Image (cartoon, rainbow, N blue to C red; front, side, top):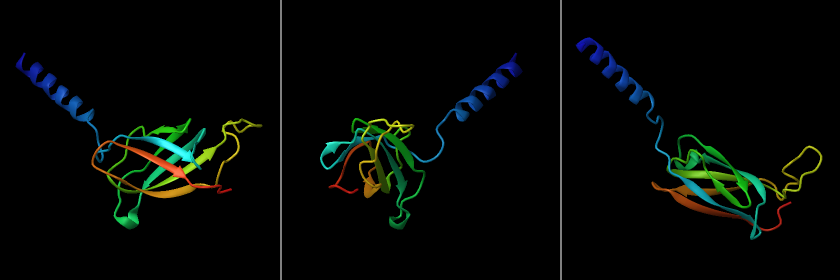
Length: 127
């Protein structure tokens, strides 16, 4: 009986350790993405650490829908580069996202050690 309890306890500890989060701590990032002051109907935003400014860790990608995005796994704190891709949302042929609104736009973003809302405006007519 004592041996069975020891085996059960070892299994539970192993299970608990195996289910814990691994990797760096990430913070929730949500926001709005606009182009020339108007919401981006459909798009994508990609964050990657800005290694030239000391950023490290994994990046992340989120879909933009009606101007809003949420990073699923979140981001590690520090400097990042955010690249935004925006489309008009009017499907044609085999492209469900529609026509590009602008060339990919990249900007710097600092992610603090807390959950954050980031609003990014892609300026002007960049086609």
